[in-house]
Structure formats: structure tokens, C-alpha cells
Image (cartoon, rainbow, N blue to C red):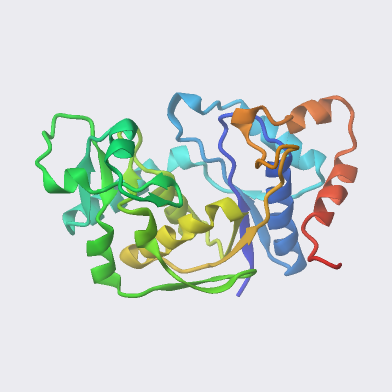
Length: 272
């Protein structure tokens, strides 16, 4: 099977070293196998998405010495998200939810990989269809359809899919036609991704994505959840914390190829 990886940044802020590392890992795994490395812009984050950042991302990747094929951005794929969600809803697998984050935190009885686990409040009550509502996946019903599922991580080995750990996740947001879970899963299938590379902080999301794949009869890739780059306080690099932008380093005249070589050392196995 041809190895197809992808780098899928959101244009809601500049790329930083963590993004560069993720892109290099995906690029190099594909290149080593004679495969393909794709760039996909995940630009459906409402007003936070800034179209001009796409060009900046391309300049950053070129500065790092990477070559890629670009696939359609998420904003061109809204119909596919709507159709998939509608199909799941017609099967009784989605239900509307009007709970706020504060209400969920107050009602939750346990914590999951993404924080307080939604306790299913709206699953047990009638929702006025005129109210803005998210659509959640009834994980218990979904698992009754699919049965036990597995997935393979290149570093951690075979995994039993544990989609229930995070509760009934949002599939369609109140303000957008898809959540990350639905959009990324559909996009990876549409793009022919055979090896999904991303940070270890998204390991838990793959349990949900494997369930969505089974429900929608999508191809199942392998995954590679790489380590995260951390700041001086031991936190993962993040746009919201103001991690230094690649574009600033590029415009200051830093050598992008040298930086890429340094980042590649971070991905070598221990003892190499």
C-alpha cells in the first residue's frame, strides 16, 4: 500500500515549532516510503480562520525544505460533512444538545481525555428545534452497531478502540457543520490518507475517529502519534500561549533547512 501522510493546519494563527515538527514527521515518513505528503488547510473555524495565513503556511513549509501536494481545503467540503451527519441522524445515532460548557462542567461526574465528560443531559429531554444546538454522537448506540473495534498505532501498537471514554462527543457544532472529529475523519478518507500522523495529545481522538469510520464504512488507515515539543515550562507549544511564529524566524533570516535538521533529531528513537 502506498504511504500517504498529511499535514493539516488551521489558519487561526501562525505556525510555530510544534507545527514544523509535525509537518516534518509526516513529510519524512512519506518520503522514506516513496509515498506522498499532502497539505490540507482546515479552515472552517468560523471568523477565527484567516485566509491569508494559508499562503504564509506554504512559505513556512518551503522554507523548511518540504515538498507537498495540496488537497482541497475543508471549506470546500461542507456538503460532505452535512450529508454524513444527516445520515447518522437518520439512523438515530445523533441527538441535539443545547448545554453550555459551564453546564457540562457542573453536571459532569467524571473526567475524560478532553476534560469533564458530558453526562448525556439532552439525550433525556426534548429540545426545541428552534434553538441553536450541537449534535452529539450517542456512543452507546453507535457501539451497539459496530461492536468492538481496533486500530493500529505505529509506535504504541494495536489498540482497542475506547470511544466511550470521552462520552457522547460533538459531531456537529452549534456554529459549524462539523466538529474536528467528523471533518478530519471524512477528509482523511477522501484524501486517501493511509498513515495519519499527529501529536500524542490527539491519541484519544483516534478512538472516536475509528468509531466514525466504522459507522460510515470508511477505509481504516494506520496512525503515528508522535511526541510533542514542549516549552520551558513543560507545556506543549500552542498558538494561544504565543509560541514564537515560524514566519518571524523566517523573516529574521534564520536558516530553515538547519532548523528542520535540528527538529528531525527530536524524532529519532531513544539511543539513536
